[in-house]
Length: 417
Image (tube, rainbow, N blue to C red; front, side):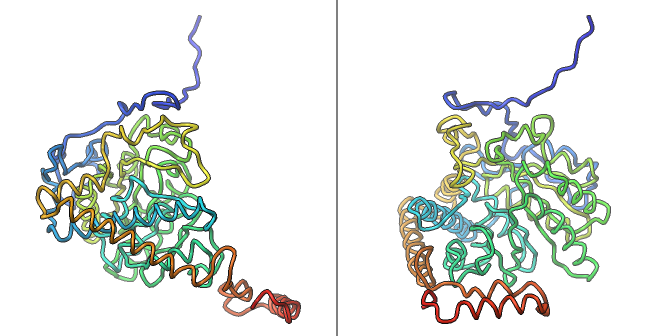
């Protein structure tokens, strides 16, 4: 009897009640992967999309050709940004559980992705973040108060109450509005980069999505346009292993790496240890130089782990092994950089604890200021007139009639006081 075909279901390494299993993860030794010239052809460096660029070894030393040779002071700034991101996340998580904000998404375990990449790029580069890239906003200098006001949808909300929490933006700091529709960042980033090239600017664009979003059509359309027009863009796939409750194998990660999709389009693909601050910084700098010199786009896969729940609406204990992050073979990005600095950068456990306390106090003071602009239950509140603004250059007559009707109905009401 002839064999019949069977539908393949990608296996999930471990489920609730089982021991965490990361044996599927292909890891290169620190310092092992060569660093090619930034102008190398994508076809000649395809191995970068399969190997894993790593700089920090098991002894907390920086080794190999990708060592970025950053000064200790710059690494300390990076450590501070990552610690502030985590302290901010922790406080906002607690605030959501206490009913003070409606929704939140932490970046626990992924701080090096946003912080190292943000520091490796220039202030004029345009960033198209995803919803777990709050470190980019911190690196770019957005105040915690601004971010908290957005979470509260209060009178200080940059989005004027029109967006979900964590959907920050800043035109001043060149941070594009975060979209809840998955993968929109990629074609937007490519389009912006193409426009910058047409105008003869020296700026590039960078976009971030999760590995699950790579299954969206926007991902492939963006890669095609980036390849055809050699757009100065960096396209980042943050492979944190989980798309909400779905393991990364269902997005295609079981067969080949996500970075390997780059060479198929004629784009340089590179896979990097996303919990190694130095490696992430070095790879991003390499891709940025490649874009600025006209050598084309780069697809970066940042291999990391989503240590926390997908969001405050998610319970990972229903689909993952308990305490799985403690077994993650690439470790914790903050702890790894801290150990490296203690060994080589004039850092210490005492300075680390003091900085932790300072940052927690900063977060607490920022929250105290943010709530003066309004909370979920108490004023001051946004003016409802704002719903009519920022949509049309000139307001249509029908909307003007609606606004006047609303004003007439509200006149004399006491809730505005």
